[in-house]
Length: 330
Ligand code: EAX
Image 1 (cartoon, rainbow, N blue to C red):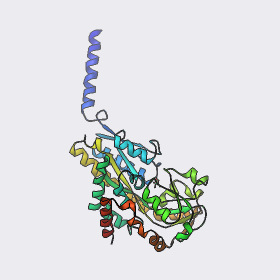
Image 2: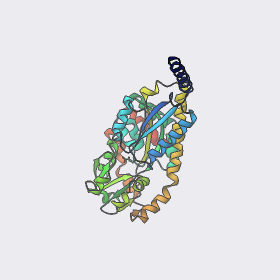
Image 3: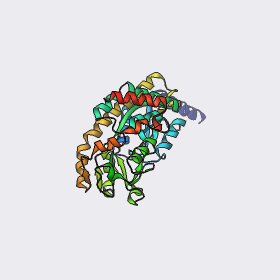
Image 4: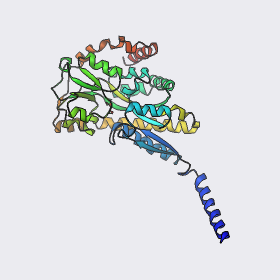
């Protein structure tokens, strides 16, 4: 009896060891990745692509679990968890990075990039890299930029063509000094609020918000916001980050694998996002939104022209990066 048991134990141990040391699920490193948005959102598409690529390319050495729909809290809280390495990665909108790393403000500068191609060229180039590297001093390994897209204003009150139409509107903004300043300079009444904001819009706590077109579709803002103006005032990026504390525990092969998979996922997601934009505008119109396709962008731009001289850009390092960016977009 005892002998049989011993044999069984030995056999189980043998199979367990084979399984364990063959680099399968037992040995896989789990990456917890946080996004605040829900499936179908720009952040989620980048996260899902990254998961697919890294699991495939690492032959299962990495497994990614995506925490979405604010299950880990808002974007500021997600970033704090990355700093502490309670989660290993995150895809977070440009705005909330502002308090962690003021240098990211330069990308939120209003009317900075002319178009998608220019944004890609600069963010995938040396200036983008410098900004990503700078995140190390806040505990993040900056991997890549995926995108939200150009931001547009919606509201429930009236059509917006000029800055005068914005006067006094209660506009929700991200947790970002620069975004708040843009809207107060334009004459609105900006209210910082973390995502999501459907209920606040519905209840009239705020009159409007600004985001790329996919947001109006995925979060059904057409149900509660009648007016959309294609202001394209800020190119909104996400920064795809890892916890620096975790990053340092990885060997170089794995670091490179993750870096490349995230960059590839970002490029894929940007293309996908842009390809859908024309249909989205059509859909939003069909859903009843009144769209101002050509607001007076020059008047908006003129009104925020002094922003570069404001305090929030006065840190010498931030100032220098802003000047370089402005030179690069010429
Ligand atoms: O990605 O907070 C925001 O306005 C973000 O753009 C939102 O999470 C959608």
